[in-house]
Image (cartoon, rainbow, N blue to C red; front, side, top):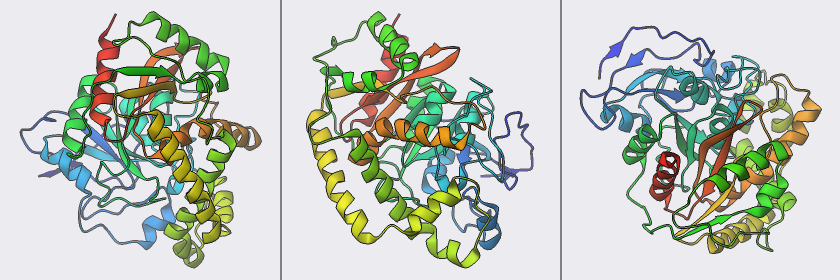
Length: 400
């Protein structure tokens, strides 16, 4: 696969300064003629991986191998046009990076793009490329997909290879991808998903009423109107009015926060203590918090995580899908006050953490707008039902 010294225009500030040159894929394959970008946590042989932090870039050697999922896309005929910005150490879903700047959300330029796969979403939304590889630990594909009006999937935990990717919190880490077009989105899925699918015909479509009631009116009302305008096949089933009794929003969010923090520090803590890098606002405070999370704290939350996973898997067996807003609120303005962001994060994470804690797949589908801003429908499926979610989304968006 030839490396081409060819520059790519970057009108939305999505590429990292250390991006490799273009890498051409195979001359034929299911992704032939498509262009893609790669989040800066995936290794590219002979080039450094930055993880959103310049000090990490400076203190680490170039990768010796290319990440498996990147290789799969190249082998399938796609051309990689470069590496893109992410939130620092992936520890935010806002999309702002103090070192490299904030990629522009082409769908709503004054609003945050969402993160941590901010550059991935921005590069696709702007039309620079056809699809992008991101990752999702606590919403890092689903949130930017929703904010930028894209298709995005957090797959069943473990279904996409993370070989050659920097870990964050392995209990939750997944690869994922974005596309504007549902057919391209499906083509990428056919290449990158493993063969561990659990086949079942969707015969029970349920609305998560508790999630719509929890969300802001400017999100829930247009989503409900859109759902009411569609003819579902099969018709909508009995709505899920309440969360399973084992799950409470605050408790679930806290379990995710503690487990993630403990594992983030296990991943980056030794290097941070040694290198004392310059960490951006918000990330520094979260790392300071993570440093003080004990193994015993994580163990307590793991027990609750397992209860959440069991309850949701029983609620969403093979053949059932659950409809809910991807995010409870619209994206906020860039450079929003940190105190406002803290409240915003908590509300957003309350919905997002459900798929993360359970390991179930969730797709983000851009279906409508509110105040001119994209609003996306989330669909959570059963473990291994990723292909059916992709097909469901494609059929849903093709109906009049």
